[in-house]
Length: 190
Image 1 (tube, helix red, strand yellow):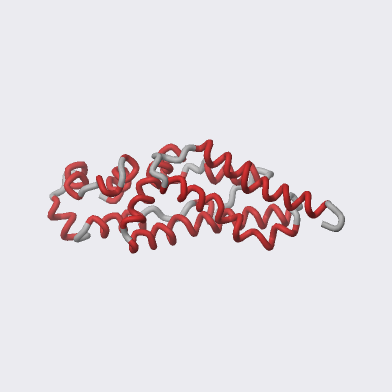
Image 2 (cartoon, rainbow, N blue to C red; image 1 turned 45 degrees about the horizontal axis):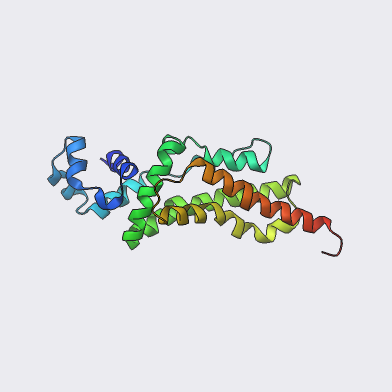
């Protein structure tokens, strides 16, 4: 039932997901769902919690460059890969906007783990010498950029955020900021 709820969220907005449809797709009685969860919000909360954490939180990608590692997170097979994960996140975004408890769970179960992954990748780039040490002071802000811009884009209601959007954010925002810091660090008196 939780997987079906997530599938429905990947197919449509939160507002269009119904317990009737979850019951019909799973072959369960609607009373079974109400007995277990009581409301659609409770069912969606349970479904979000069932996602688990992105696997990269436990095992960072290590493909040899910051760009490759950032894009490996975008391309992660988690939740069926980016083609399924992006529509699911769009559905979760609409759910989070409509319910404070859902918003809290999406933030703690999805957004914050991604910020932590990006933070750790950026710090590792500094440790490797791929990024200047000045980046350390800005890591928290840059780590939040990809999830924040994703959330913003999803909030515009234009549908699913595609991979090319994430590639542009990585290349034109995150890595551009790192390159800017590198240029500043190399310029005497800057």
